[in-house]
Length: 375
Image (cartoon, rainbow, N blue to C red; front, top):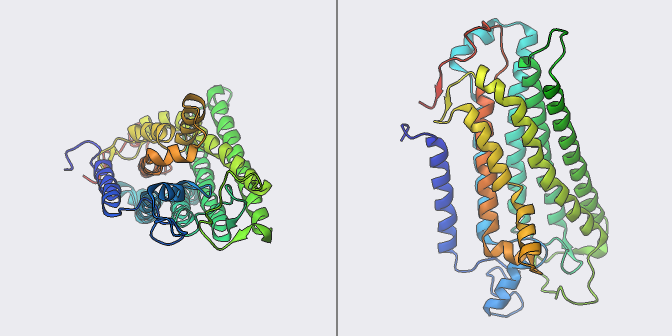
C-alpha cells in the first residue's frame, strides 16, 4: 500500500466513503426529527413529512451529515496529536544545538499548525452537535434552540482560529525564508501576497464577529427560544418572520464562506517557492509537500467551503429553485463538503510537517533532507 502515491490520503478517503455509505444504508430514515425517529414528529408518517423534517428549521440535519461532521473532527484530533508529538528525525541534533531565537521561531511554526488542526477539530465536534441534537436555527419559524446558537459560535470560532493559525504559519515561514533585493527589501510580489493574506483573514475574522453578534443577540432574546429541535411550524405562514439576529448571522456566514477559501490563494503563493526549495521532507505519507499545498488549495476551492457559494449559485440562479436547503440535502451536500474540508486540512498538515523553521543548517544543500515520512 505504501508504494501507492498519496497512500495516506487514499486510506483516509476510502474509510470516509465507507462510513458515509454505511450510514446511508443502515439508517432507513434520512433524518432524526423531533420524535427521535424521523417519522414526522407530530404523528405524520408520510415521506413528505419526513423530507420536511430534513429541510426545515434552517439547517441540514441529515444523519449522514452530522456523522461525517464527527468523522472530520476525529481525524483532525488525530492529526493534531500527531503534529504535537512529531519530531523531524534528521533534525534532532540541530534542534538541540540551535540558538534560542531560532528555537522560538520553530516552536511558533509548529504551534500555529497545531492550532489550525485543533481549531478544525473543535469546529466539527460543535458542528456535529449543531446539526443533530440542536438542529434549529430559528430561520424558518422565528424560534431557535439555545444549544444551536452556542455550538454555532464555538464551531465558527474554531474555524476562524484555524484561519488565523494558517496566517501565523504562513507569515512566519515566509519571513524566515523570503528573499531580499539589493536594498534589503522584500520583493513586490511578496509584499502583495502578505497584504492580501492579511486582508482576507481580516474579512474572515469580521465575518465571525458578525456570526457571534447575531447568535448572542438570539441567545439574549427569550422570545426566540424553544427547546424543540423541530417545531413543525409552516415556514410559509405569513405571520412568521425571520428574526433580525438570525438574518445577521446567516448573512455573516455567507461572507465567511467566501473569505476563508480566499486566504488559501495568497498563502499558497507565499509558501510554494519555499516548499520547493526548503522542504525538510520529500514525502509525507506518500505525497510531496508542494503537491500537498496545491491539493489543499484546490480541495478548499472545489469541495470545501467554496462549495456553498457554488451550490447557492446553481440552485438559485441556474435552477431558479426556491429551496436551497432541499437541493443541498438531495445531493448529500454535507458529505461532499466534509470530504473537501477533510482533504484540505489533511494536506495542510503535510505542509506543516514539511516546513519547520531553519535552524542554522547550511543554506546551500541541507534544507532538503531526504526523509520520507511514513515510508
